[in-house]
Image 1 (cartoon, helix red, strand yellow):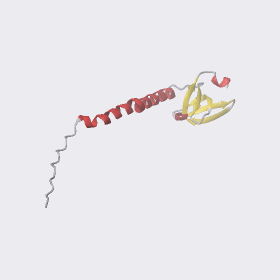
Image 2: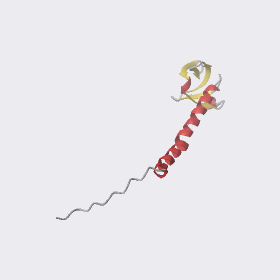
Image 3: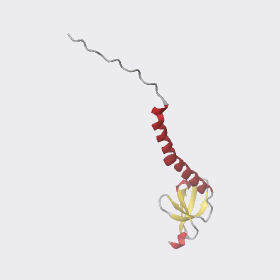
Length: 105
């Protein structure tokens, strides 16, 4: 009978920096392309909501265009037409428009 010769297996390499390098690079790319810009937009949105004043013209997340009539801590009253006032949550205000934009619509 012929005996089978078995090759000795090599010892597994210790995990090194080279194995984690692709994961580190992917995380850095995600940070600069996704996470960082999102944090910057959230910061700008928060600042815009804090600086909101009566008379500003805004667009809400639902697409309503109106002039700010009253501001409370959580709600904003928008005048969407002469004498027509709606109440929306402050967080739904998405964009601050330049003065006079509503007249141009």
